[in-house]
Image (cartoon, rainbow, N blue to C red; front, side, top):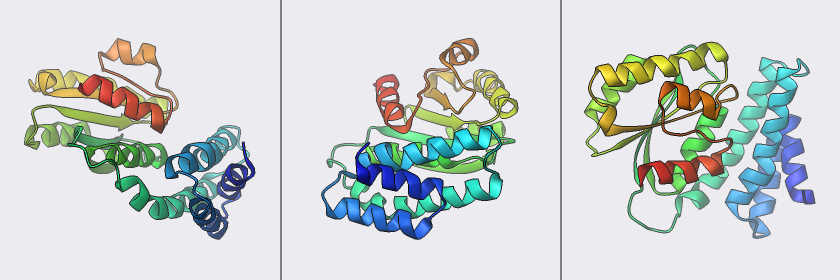
Length: 214
């Protein structure tokens, strides 16, 4: 990791909002691509934060401050990401965090990345009930809809299985492609519940989303 990426990661890890903003601006000024700033700097910092949270070395208030630091940087990077390549929309996406879960850092990053790569993204937020998701699918004026749901806890992850069943019961399965992510989500879980894909990070999520929507 180069110095600027390490400094970006360290600023996020130490909940240094001003430092994160300054380093993000510095990286942009030096010609560092916005995507590299996110993937090689900010995201690496959030990965460490997540690990420290799991081991009990960091607590929720600190997690929220690290998230605020990253979000402050994302506000600066958003215009750069939004420039895109001017191509036609890659598809319509409904993004949400599963009911019972309020951890949205990863989901927000994936939503931003999908938007930067041509998807039209509707973000439903956190703690979203399956009924709300299904109603959004029904209302969507699109031939095919990409669902991007996340869950950081095993308990909320179980709601993904219920959502797949509900989608079948409501007769809209043919209209949607379902991609789920989050720490406890694995490919075997995706296979078990009959979803269409998962990804380990935001960059991979874009690749998977484009593949399953093709």
